[in-house]
Every structure is written in C-alpha cells, then in structure tokens.
Amino acid sequence: MKSFHWTGFSALAAVALYGRLPSVAEAASSVISPKIVILSMYADEAGSWYDIPEFNVLEKNYTIPGLSPVYPSLHCTADGQICQLTTGEGEANAAVSVATLAFSPLLNLTQTYFMIAGIAGINPKVASVGSVTFARYAVHVGLQYEIDAREIPSNWSTGYFAQDATQPGEFPGVFYGTEVYEVNDALRQLAYSAAKTATLSDSPDSTPLRANYSKNPEYKAGSEPIWEANVYLCDTATSDTYWDGDLLGVAFEGTVSVFTGGQGVYCSTQQEDNATLQALLRAAIVKRVDFNRIIIMRTASDFDRQYPGQSVVASLLGPEPGYEDSIANIHIAGVKVVEMVLDGWGSQFAGGVLAGNYVGDVFGSLGGKPDFIPPASAQAVGRKRGYSRRR
Ligand SMILES: *[C@@H]1O[C@H](CO)[C@@H](O)[C@H](O)[C@H]1NC(C)=O
Ligand SMILES: *[C@@H]1O[C@H](CO)[C@@H](O)[C@H](O)[C@H]1NC(C)=O
Ligand SMILES: *[C@@H]1O[C@H](CO)[C@@H](O)[C@H](O)[C@H]1NC(C)=O
Ligand SMILES: *[C@@H]1O[C@H](CO)[C@@H](O)[C@H](O)[C@H]1NC(C)=O
Ligand SMILES: *[C@@H]1O[C@H](CO)[C@@H](O)[C@H](O)[C@H]1NC(C)=O
Image (cartoon, rainbow, N blue to C red; front, side):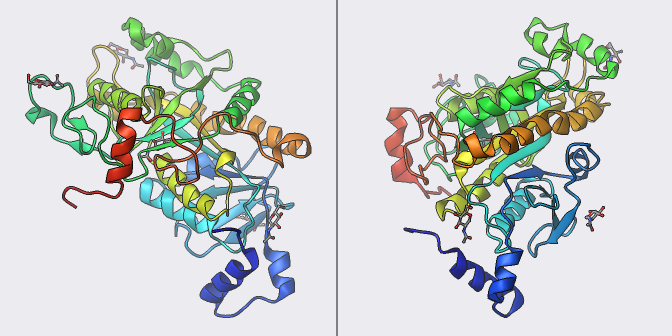
C-alpha cells in the first residue's frame, strides 16, 4: 500500500459501524490524535492511573464497538493528549482490543506513542519484586511444541522446544510470525532514563520474601530491595498459560535466548504483550500506527519461580507481598515516561525517535531484516513461512 487514505477508511468504517456516512463536521470534530496511549490489561493496572495528581484520563470516555465488554471505553484527558485503554487479560483479549483501537475511525494514531504498562512475574536472577522493566524483545514462549515433562527423553531438561525443531535448544524451523517482536531500543533507553528519575514504591512487606531468595546466590538480584530506583532493561515472555517454577523458568530463559539469536534476556513474564504487538504490527503495515513508537514497561509483582525449599505450588498460589508496589509503580514510573513524551513533543517526539536497531517481527513485515535470526536459519524461515506440519 502506497499511502494511507484516512478519509476513505474512516467513511467506510463509519458506514459499517453506523450505517451512514458522517458529515464532514462530525468526522473532523470526532477524530482524536493522542500523543500517548497507555495500555493496561485489567482493572488494577488501569486503576493505577485513575487518581493521580499529574493528569486525569477519566475526563473523556469514548465507547468503541469491538472493545472488551468488560472494558468498553477508551479513557482520555479532556485535551485528548493522553488516553488509556484496558484490553482485558490474555492473548486473545489483548489482540482484539488493540486491533479494534488501532483500526477505529475515531482515532488518528499515526504519531501516537503506545506504552504497554502492566505487572509481570519476575526472574529472580535479574530483578526483584517491585522493580520496573523495559523490554526490547517480546518472545512468545507459549508458541512451541510441548510434551509433558514426565515423558521427555532422559537427556532433555524441558518438554518445550521450538516448532519444527527436534529438541530443546534448537532455533525454530517454522515461524507463525508472532514468535518475536523487537521494539525501538533508542526509545526504550529514553523511557528507561526517565523512569530512573522516579522514586519507586517499596513496602517492607517484601523484605522477608526477598530474604528467602538470598539462599540461592544466583538469585542475588531478587533478594535485594529496590530503594534505589530499580529500573531494568530486560526482555519479556508471553504465554496464555500462567507458569511458575524453576524448571519452566529455566526452559523459557532458554526459549527467549534461542528465539532472539542469543540477544534477549528473559526477565518478565506476562500473558499479552505478543498479542498486543501483533495487533499494532498489522496496523503499522497499513500505516495507521508507527511501530517505532512502542514502549513495553512491566513492573514486577511476584517471582516466576520458587525460593530454595519452597514448593512450586506455594510459589504460584502463595501471598504476593510485592503486588501493591507493582501496581503503584506502574504510574510512578510511567508518569515520567508520559511527561517525557509530552514535554519533549515539539523538540523530539512528534518527529519520532530514530531506532538504531531492527524494529518489527520475524518476517520483516515492516521492512528490514530481523537481526536476531542466525544466518543459517534465515532461509528456512523464508521457505517455511506459513508452513504447518499438522494443523
Ligand atoms: C493524522 O495526523 C497526522 C499528524 O498530525 C496528520 O499529518 C495526518 O494528516 C492526519 N491524518 C488524517 C487523515 O487526518
Ligand atoms: C469515565 O468513566 C469512568 C468509569 O469508567 C467514570 O468514573 C468517569 O466519571 C467517566 N467520565 C465521564 C466524563 O463521564
Ligand atoms: C512477543 O513479543 C516479544 C517482545 O515483547 C518478542 O520478543 C517475542 O518474540 C514475541 N513473541 C511472539 C511469539 O510474538
Ligand atoms: C540426547 O541424546 C541423543 C542421543 O544420544 C542425542 O542425539 C541428542 O542430541 C541429545 N539431546 C540433548 C538435548 O542433549
Ligand atoms: C521464608 O522461608 C521460611 C522457611 O521456608 C518460611 O517459613 C517463611 O514463610 C518464608 N517467608 C516468606 C515471606 O515467604
């Protein structure tokens, strides 16, 4: 597609939605162009933004057909510069809600920044509960072959391995296209620096839990308090399945590394980011959004695995003393990022932040070539794109 015809799309979509064409005046007055859209996945993450002194995203509500029945409205400041959407949890909710937003005739998102702002599980090898993370790679670790761990060959460490591979540790032989996304690293560095200036919330409730992680020297980062604005650059893993435990943690550390050609560092775990990115990618292909303007921020609510001596079930179902801090830190760190974009709009952000790295999906749908695919596998990816062994 050569260029994006807003008026044509908008009129067609309006006919589909409302059965008639909007008048010119209606169309002009109803289109909003936020500078930043905050993406929350459920009520507590959204609520982090609702009663803060810096700005009020509940001044204007826009009900958009196609959003989650539980969260039917986009919320914005009165001037329309900052908006917040709650997608609903899990991959399907995130993909459909974000696609609905991205293709809505109500919005012109061509210059909009998107910040995924949610909580996550955290790898104690990298960070502790309450900390804030910014990802460059989002890896869909659920999109793999799996055999139950009780039936794996004796020399395998996990039952998960890449599609069209023969064992764990091998690069996928086939991609569906949503396995890995890479976002703008220069923008990520700016967001990281802005968030570093925040004074994060860290309650003493997390101290005894962290102390238990100190029993394993590998978990040093997880055992330390976050008094000094603990903000990290590390990557995120998506799966609808909410996993817990050392073995799956180590398995998915491996998946993130294998899928990103050794460049990704697994630290946060969540159930939506790859789906959100897929929706934004499809909108970016038709130039409705700019894929260079995406920030993935996840704050750590709980550990992704047990401490030494704890059962995995207790780790999964037990108390999460870091939860309140992780919710509070969404806006405490996130406000700094929003202010950075708004305050620097004229000087830097309206025109976009030049990415030094590849930005996009495994197929190179937006142009360029993914830098995370080892050269030996590149041909296979091209050849087997869309291939399916059984389904
Ligand atoms: C969308 O916003 C951009 C940036 O302000 C502008 O250049 C473009 O013309 C707008 N598109 C439409 C269809 O209004
Ligand atoms: C927008 O919706 C929220 C609840 O979702 C409500 O609290 C708020 O008052 C609404 N704002 C307006 C202007 O109606
Ligand atoms: C999911 O998104 C992450 C980046 O947030 C990316 O590294 C990963 O490859 C994506 N995975 C899939 C399956 O889309
Ligand atoms: C497991 O052992 C088989 C047979 O020796 C070997 O071919 C394979 O590479 C091994 N796999 C792993 C993951 O170590
Ligand atoms: C820390 O570990 C001890 C011993 O296993 C346990 O009794 C205690 O409840 C744990 N504390 C937390 C906060 O998990």
